Image (tube, rainbow, N blue to C red; front, side, top):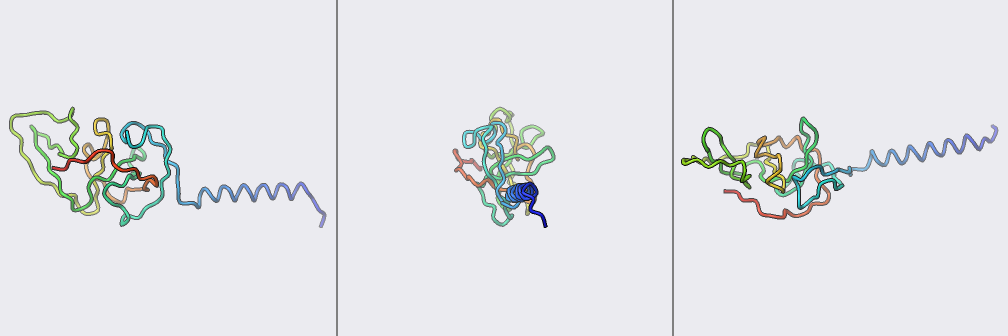
Length: 165
């Protein structure tokens, strides 16, 4: 066999490259970029955080998660889990969730009817930390817990209380 330094150098570069690429695919942490203002002031828009895969049994109220939606992933905080209850108010023909109510969206009518709602099994209710601009469960309802892709590694505390009536 003839010693070929060019072959050895090429083979070692290829092996190192394969090793580095393998590390990115095998490690559990994935970088996530926060888009928009829905998680402000807790997470600023355009900031990078790490997420890790999570089992549904490891999710708790207050966790910040990455959710797989039809338009792409979104980042929200779990406000209510399966079995939790909250109040809705009917104002005119529409029902509004009384969880951290969006002030501009809630019309005032003279007669309101209230009802108690329970989060169904296998579902969660998610909110953005910035109530005024967040597109969340107040808009699209409960989501299946199976649509949770990962949980943020940097779990910052909720900066303001959730009002559940």
